[in-house]
Image (tube, rainbow, N blue to C red; front, side, top):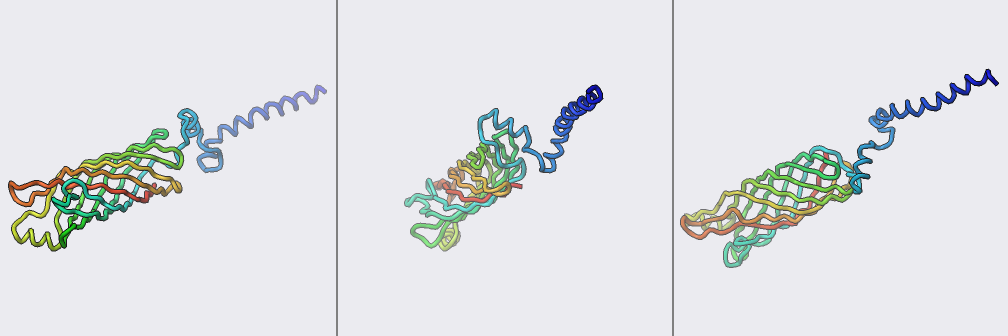
Length: 231
C-alpha cells in the first residue's frame, strides 16, 4: 500500500494541473476559433441584460433608395408644385462599439429628383453631409437615430427650368443641409444588414427666383430602404 501512495499523489496533482493548463491555453483556442465565445462578450450581455451584439466594430458601407416626399414650399400646389420623386443615397462610416451601444461618425451623399404638378419640369436635389449615427444593438435588431449637417444644392430642371433661365430668373440654390433619420437595421449575417428608416430633411435651403423676390423653402421626407455592408 505504501508503494502506491506516490502514484496516487501524482495522479491527484495531474488532475489539478491539466484543467489549469487548459484554462491558460483557452485564449489561444478562442483566438483560433476552436474554443468558447469570448468571456468579455458574455459578461457584457449578462451585466446589461440585453442580447449580445452580432456585429463587430468596424467600417460600414450603405446604399439606400427611397420615395422622396416634398414638404414646405417645394410640395405646395400654390408655390413650387413639386411632386413625389425618388432618392438614392450612399454612406460610409466607422462604428465604435461600447457594449450594446454603437456610435458611428460618417459621411453621406444623396441625390433626389422631384417632378412638377402642372408643368413639364422638375427639381434636382444634391446633398453632401457629415453625420453621426447612434445605434442600440439588440441581437439581430438594431434601432438607431442619425443627425447630420452639410451642403445642399437644388436646381429647377426640364422645360420650366429652361424657360425661367431664359427669362433671367435664378433657377438654383445652395445652402446648409440639415438631416434627421430614425430607423432600424436587421442583421442578416456578420457582414450584411438590411435597414428601414424615416428621413426628415427640413427646408433650410431656399430658392429665390429674382433678387428681392420671394424665397421658397426646399425640404422633403423619405422612407429609406437600404443594405449595409459591415466590414
